[in-house]
Structures are given as structure tokens and as C-alpha cells.
Length: 148
Image 1 (spheres, rainbow, N blue to C red):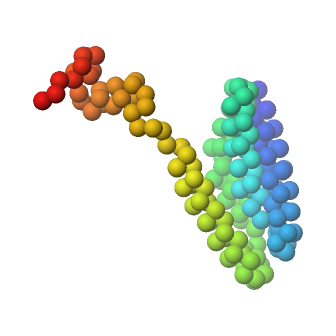
Image 2 (image 1 turned 135 degrees about the vertical axis):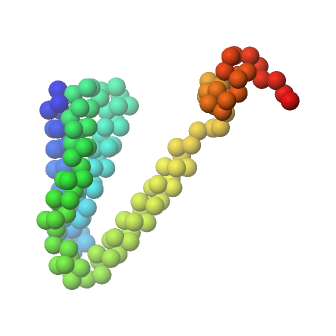
Image 3 (image 1 turned 90 degrees about the vertical axis):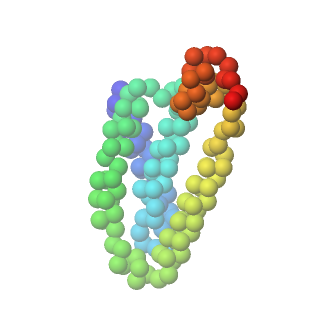
């Protein structure tokens, strides 16, 4: 049922907001620091965990996909509630937090890019598909390619 996906999102949101509040207290800022981002990371991790164990049913997937289409408006609405001017006046911790989070995101993208690569030509079916797409008529008919 779709409600399970919405429940998963609600659980991730509650945990993310709680962790964001804890992070704000730890940094000395009287605001939620990254709660929505943490919630989205938890949702991605929960979805991946369920998918790896074969427990991501159609209802959960539908509920998560429904809210993923609403992601941008929700983030904009939640960001509008934040008092950015008061946070910046609070000190340089905002700039430090922004810089550190940006660097962490760059590092994560680089790490995922490095580990997400596949060995080139490891699969014969992939090589055959590349030959067909590349316009090799001999490979498309299943015959060995002739060398010119």
C-alpha cells in the first residue's frame, strides 16, 4: 500500500528533524541544521536497504515516488521557514558549516564515482550491444567482425 511509503518518509523526516535539532544544539545554533537533508539521506538509505533485501514492495515504492515528485516544493517551503538572517548574524559557524557540507558533498560524489565504475568490456553482452549501437553490421548479425 502507498501508505507504507508515506510512513517511511514520515519516519525519516522525524528522525532527520530530530538529528538536525541535535546538530544545531551541538553547534550552538538555535535552529535545525540540515534536518531535511538528513531526512532525505535516511530515505535514500532506507529505500536502498529495502531494495537490497527484496522488501521494497509496490506500495512502498509508490509512496516514496509520490513524495519524491513533491521534493522541490517541500524543500522550498521548509527553507522559507528558516531565519537565514538571524543565522548569519549568529557568527561564522554558518559559513563554516556550509563550506564543510559542500566539501563533504564533493567528496561523496567523487567517492561514488570511483566505486560506481564497472570494468570496461567485462560483459560480452555489453560489448555486443556497444558494437550494435556503434553500427558494426557484422556484430549485429551475430557473425564475427572482419578485420580490414
